[in-house]
Image (cartoon, rainbow, N blue to C red; front, side, top):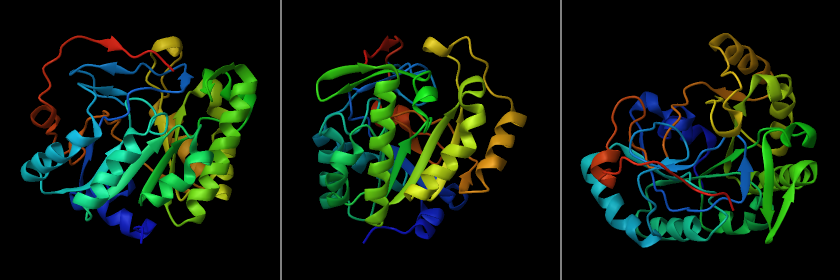
Length: 290
């Protein structure tokens, strides 16, 4: 039986469990992505503290040794999460890793993040492997707005651009959320908040994803980089304003730490990624999309 939303609020740092010193480990097993977000600069390095960054990509079978080591150093770890650096459903790596965790570490909460492009068609796989919480990044529910945030998708081997791509992505995200939520999995939705592009649209996203079955909503301020490097990062006042609007429809999470794809420990309190992944690289290599 999956952990309920209430359970996760006590034991998962991305649902409020940070207050109980709940820790998490991110396993960077997913190498490639299938969408081209204009704000995303996925990178292998040791120095940046943000999503999409890892010091290395590991194989699913390497996760056992890493988890044993991490739990020894940080017994507070309650959650094994996979959040990249690419998309978790663009390859089988994440689901294969969760199968290993289900067998070898049954007490760990299994948490996965995805862009949702393949969520509708892979929902059964997600349900079967026993994911406890799923995070889906939904940056718009209007294809016109989404097309300003995402250049293209790679869908069944085909590159699709613009509004057509956005339409497919949004339809698959919402259909996938419905399936997974109906199976009892707690769904969190992340939105990257870009004031000049989706600032007036946040309320609509919140209402739509709640209707689809999401339980909690996380609004992440843009880090201006890549193709949106000239966009302004939202101010604290702007972030608070959209969170207040969204909270009319759905619970809003307010403590996101912008974690790396290889983060380990209790967010804001301890960080053991250096020891677990032996970060030594000081170069920055950008993954190509697709």
